[in-house]
Image 1: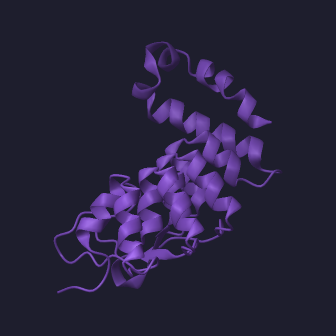
Image 2 (image 1 turned 90 degrees about the vertical axis):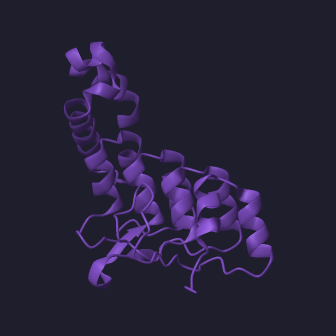
Length: 188
């Protein structure tokens, strides 16, 4: 039998089942216990295949479950723990997973709770860089320093309008400036 978070519990967390997670914790489960994948496991969104050591907070952040994230923070989950990849390189934190998936409310809450935005994964990327790569302007705005915010958001918007036009509709794909104009309020 493997040590670590039970796979069934991780699936419940991925589904946003706060009651099941709370029951496991109330029954003596450790809030910062890590998942041990084994050889046949597949990683959820925001994590790389083969990445081990996810916590419940990381899973909730990657899946965008605000209610579950709030419960875990209130129960004392560690905010800046990182998973680990091959050769024990650092993987993504909860903040990185939320930023990579574009979950701005998750990023906002983790920052308010004290998550470290300077952490880097095994590829040397921060949460800000993952948000920029995904074209998630609101997450970039939350993570960027005020002096760099405007340029960082513009770069994320440009990347998203060029790399993912299928998500913005025909009119916006035909006119990338239309999407940029809609994002002007988040540049303030």
